[in-house]
Length: 183
Image 1 (cartoon, rainbow, N blue to C red):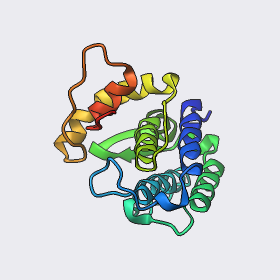
Image 2: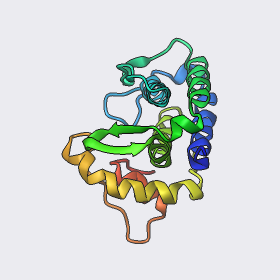
Image 3: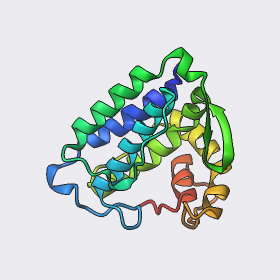
C-alpha cells in the first residue's frame, strides 16, 4: 500500500509549486547557490528517480539543475509517471539508498516526506509564500531527520544545524536540523 504521508507530502509540494509567481523562479532559495527553479528541478528529479526505481530501472542522472521550461508541467508528468509505477510489486522491490542502506520502495517512501517538506519550505521562502507544514507530516519527518542528519552532515550533504530554543515547535526544529533559519 502506498504510504499516505508520501502522497500528502507530494500534495504539499504541489500546492507551493502551483503558487509560484512567474517572476520568482530565479529568486534565491535557502539552499546555498540554488534558485527557486533549482529547488523545483531537484524535487522533480527525485520523483523521476522514484519512478525509475519503482519500475526496476537504473535512475537517471538528475540534479538540482533540471530547470524545466515549465516546472508545473514537468512536475505533473513526473508525479503521474511515479504514481503509475508504484504498484504493489514495485512497493515491495528492494532498493539501495545512500549510505548503503537497503529498504523496500515502500519503506523509502515512508521516509521521503522529509525531502518534500524541507524543500516545500525552501521553495515557499524563495518565492515569498507563507507556509505552515502539516503537523501530522512534520512529526514523522523530524524523526527521520534526526536519524539521517548526522550521516548527511558527515557526507557534506547538509550544513550545520541552527540553534533553536528548547521550546521550539517541531517544524522549527526540523528546519534547523537541516540548517534552515526560520523567520
